Image (cartoon, rainbow, N blue to C red; front, top):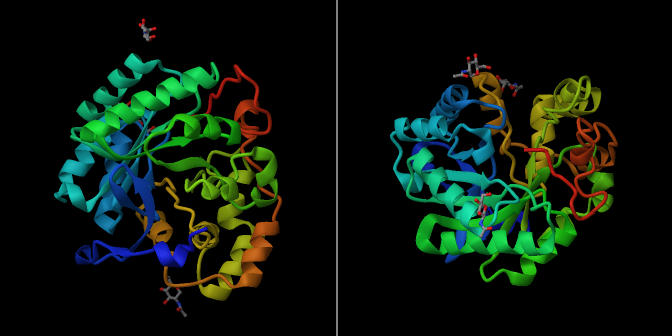
Length: 318
Ligand SMILES: *[C@@H]1O[C@H](CO)[C@@H](O)[C@H](O)[C@H]1NC(C)=O
Ligand SMILES: *[C@@H]1O[C@H](CO)[C@@H](O)[C@H](O)[C@H]1NC(C)=O
Ligand SMILES: *[C@@H]1O[C@H](CO)[C@@H](O)[C@H](O)[C@H]1NC(C)=O
């Protein structure tokens, strides 16, 4: 397994922001993914445009979106307004799972039109096609063909459990760069049952990435535990950091890229300010041993993303 320390690099120093990155295996060589980006799930175009603009003003250089978020127009507008050149920022999007090859191709082309870009840096299959192996493989190969036209520098998946990742790896002719999943403090001991665990992904060269890093979409009070809860705030006091910073640092210190979502400039700044301290081994262990908050129990399919792998299981979390 590659050590995080060995794969970090400083990008965009000219922007004044030191952005650690993680190296992904792209279609033609390595691609540097900023360790912290701005997520846009549940944001409409107006809100996404404002949040991405504020974030980029603070030095963020990675925006994460998806076709089903329906905010590509706003994200694209913010990217153009940033005044940055295309090679100075990183864009991730996701194509809905379960589309056949021609529908996948059409959705991918439309994504670029809406973003106003000629390529994305990373395109993911958002969730595994519910129809099983043949459908998962057909869609992956459609994504590959599209990426090979120069439309994506790297391709990967989201919500893919071990079995589904194996289906993709069986046919992939380009690297599967990354698997994006719900992951935060409270879930470390629950990794194995979920089957899309970090160790398995990394054994295959697939970078494991976290969404809902602060359990934001979790039902109250879980949605605040990683921000104002006792464990993270008491550890944070030792480092003069907030609970949210401890929660995010726990992830990035393990080499797990994050995309916390907020439009609040203070929180955006905090979420970005994770690289001038290091959690001790003892604190990392204490955080890893936490069993709350658990994975989102909002809907059973999502909570159990990978606890059971039945053909036809419908992945509704977007
Ligand atoms: C976008 O979302 C915001 C916040 O929820 C809301 O106030 C606004 O009306 C929405 N805009 C559109 C065009 O739906
Ligand atoms: C692919 O899916 C689209 C949209 O559902 C459908 O219209 C089309 O007939 C499908 N193509 C094939 C070859 O099944
Ligand atoms: C603690 O962090 C705050 C916010 O970043 C900063 O303003 C303050 O100077 C820090 N205090 C110490 C003692 O480093």
